[in-house]
Image (cartoon, rainbow, N blue to C red):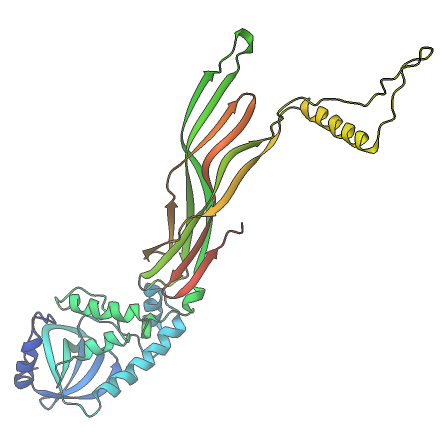
Length: 374
């Protein structure tokens, strides 16, 4: 490898300008054979030499143990790994075809089967490198931390992961990767009890009781994703709480007792009992109404709860999903609710949460929804 410039710390930013200098000082090479995307046989200074692209690992074009181990470590389907091995070899050939190439030795070498393999990178005339290209296409991974350049490599790899290129392609469409379920719980955070005596004399006093609650709604979401997980998923949760607001009890009030009445003829015979005039149809109707009023008057007060159901304003929050399963808890505002017994009548007043509306999106894909039907 005489005449080959060594670069011990190939940091992408720090050495961007130095690449131009290396192009002037580093000998040109010719690729003779692509064994793997990261393992090449080159011609340099009239000699053949096997080189390894430092800090990266690429699948083999031939199925076998190496690809099986790579499949297991990535959690990726073995068929995709085998296919990517052949595609990555073709990619290297395409990227380097009819291009001026130079090899930069990073100063580390290994011996395998009696052959010396040097670690380094191939630089193109436009200052880009073969390692950067392979990582950007998702044709290789950067599992090592041997070189300081790995930091820059990881940034390129993360972009390929995010856009699911090459080895990072998920076998399932994004809108079918996620499993979600949700549930609702209404919690009582606190309760105050009070009792007072209404005005009255002796045994006529009645107990008036009140229970004041602080209540809160809670949405519990369980979200999971199918393997493999190559990158975090960014998403949004849109939710709204449905609440019931009670206005107390609408009590039927009876204002006064009914008055019975009938029409009577005041003329009397000296030899007979009093004579009553027959009731007219109007009198009969009046008596029927009075009888009903009498029944109402003697019946205890009655009524019905008055309430309405309302949905709060929708709220959208962003989240990042970076594990195979996660739990998300959404809390509502705290509201007050009162249950009272007053004058022998029980009633409620205030508001509490009874349900929710929910949408979960990953990117623009709706992956889960729950819509409360009022």
